[in-house]
Image 1 (spheres, rainbow, N blue to C red):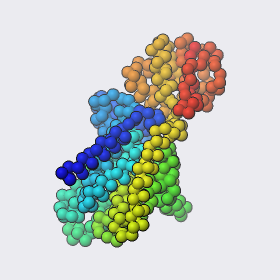
Image 2 (image 1 turned 90 degrees about the horizontal axis):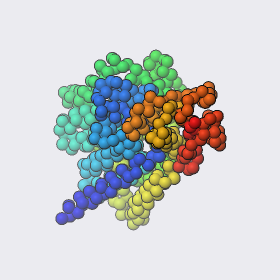
Image 3 (image 1 turned 60 degrees about the vertical axis):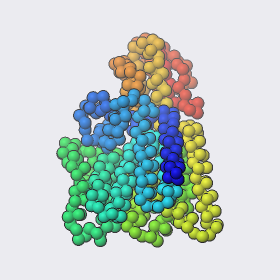
Image 4 (image 1 turned 30 degrees about the horizontal axis):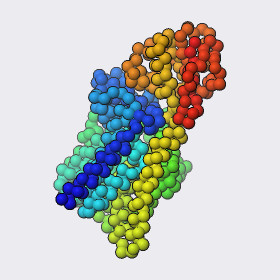
Length: 518
């Protein structure tokens, strides 16, 4: 009976979490980010035809927004959803919701391998579910989060190997890391690092067993084999990632480029970047520098973890068994890939910290309540009670004012403008639609919304123009113009023969885009 009640509590919490994580996906985040568009359009094309948006048949990697090669797992996961569901803002974000929920479930499994008491198992999942940065990334179609299930699975399999000594568990753990390389760009750095950490921790068990070491290393390399023929055909796959992250001057020879990172100035900069990933203001108060990845009203982690995580590290250091070594090392190495990229305060590139932080925080809670001091136990209760309070504040802000603060980070209300154009064409068939070419990622947005509304025929009426050189007097009747606020005085009710249409408002009532029709 007691077990039934406990498991019912887990199920009820998971169901409520699923509802919150999946609520109002088409409304918040406020609009689609350009990366979401790139992933979604490739996924839709794969789901419908087996070819990507650039006519490659089931590719290993995907050409993304004309900038870089995107990792495949997010695209194929989204394609699976779009095989059965329509292309809409909410539907394309569902794969991220599933990944976020999977993370919570896997953390419960991992915590069950570590803690005997069910209350601490539940707490680990609760801490992850209420972590702001995890919630945010579970509601937006970005590949940053898709690496986390592979990290947690590796930790689960590693804990099984440490307890039971089965080679198959260690081999599977390395295989999972190998597959995870294809989940996110930073995984190409972090997954080999986790291999190194595993061998370091288990060195006494593997140093005299070359067969074991060989088996597990082969397990890691197997998922990487498809990369060899792919790179032979598309050698720019890695180079384009260097260009995108601006790691070094891509014009340089790769060896020279890597050496350029070792200059004193570069090294000092990256030391500063690394140290600031553990800045308390960043971790517990402010969060990511981008409003795509943070509300900037709450930190990466909720504030009570500022106490629980250090206590957990202390508790793990006292025990200092193999798994505790991995957890502490994993926490402090989480920003390594982000540090190499050289960007301050970009937790989106260091989400690897999540499973280590919540498990160490659970250690910290357990340690605090193990102390016999009444003051410590009262402090623990107050901090635990503060988690849902701060969590509710975060959720309220996320679904309300965050939309107002963040819309410019999501390229303004391009969706509203495009859906208005489709509406006007339904009312009176347009001859031409002219788009201001300075509006970012407009071709991708247009393609998405034409598919959404099954109006791909409008592509034939579409032209992109430079506002500096267009002569509106020469355009045919029944033409519609879309301008950015940078290129037209929005107060004008007419431009030549063109009259201003209904305004396109942002959530705060500001206008950034204007429609005119003759």
